[in-house]
Length: 302
Ligand code: CP
Ligand code: NVA
Image 1 (cartoon, rainbow, N blue to C red):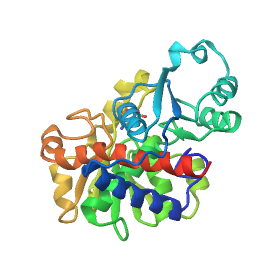
Image 2 (spheres, rainbow, N blue to C red; image 1 turned 90 degrees about the vertical axis):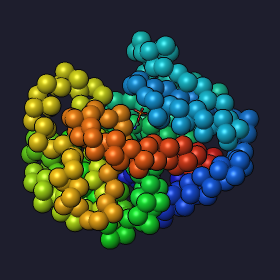
Image 3 (cartoon, protein in one colour; image 1 turned 30 degrees about the vertical axis):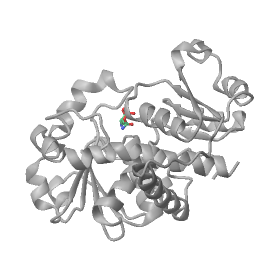
Image 4 (cartoon, rainbow, N blue to C red; image 1 turned 60 degrees about the horizontal axis):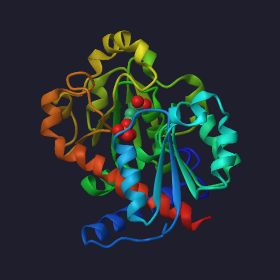
């Protein structure tokens, strides 16, 4: 694995190895022991969009592995004034050891990897949010013992980066994924055609979707870059909130997950969010452990 650009390019073996290693790294950290695989390196973090979890977990993770994180707000570098991504990549590729990029276009991350010739990580694009999925899989392993035979239901804006990354995860790992969304917010036909044969189904019937679920998952209804559509989205998506009534239909022991940030009483009922805060913030913590596994895998395969 030279880069980590999405769940789509990964194999089941690679995903499993990353989750296994993340579990080991988490246990080591709790004993105060740290791997120093990235000792003396500098990794650039180019962010065009806001972030709390991804930024902090990568900065902490890099530091713990012995590397220096170099945070670059895209607006503060020439990229923000129109310097092409491939030129930015050719400069940074000669100075830093790896790059972590959060931006809009997936193509920009792919171009950076090609021109920079250094390990490149997708820290969220409009297309995918693979780091989040890896942390979620780790949480499912911890809470449910694994995803084999489990039913994951994604409620809300199914046509966003999280919905798409979940679809690739279901295809690669073989668990059942139901995307419960209004027709206008289900993944587009072109995406479903590209996904091909996969245990993924789409519905606008939230109760049918919740029945027998093991994981009830949601994300904001207004992804970064979609703010101008907020009013319309909130109206159309209102019936797709995760609430206690849906949890009652799920399997006993089902978990509620949210990639965060959460908007209470929009995509998730505020009361339910607080009741399930432990499993939701465990998921947030797991970003750190999962991403350390990604960083080490990329450093070792250089
Ligand atoms: N879930 C997630 O990626 O959070 P941030 O936007 O805060 O990084
Ligand atoms: N779909 C959301 C995820 C935020 C972590 C967004 O892209 O804004």
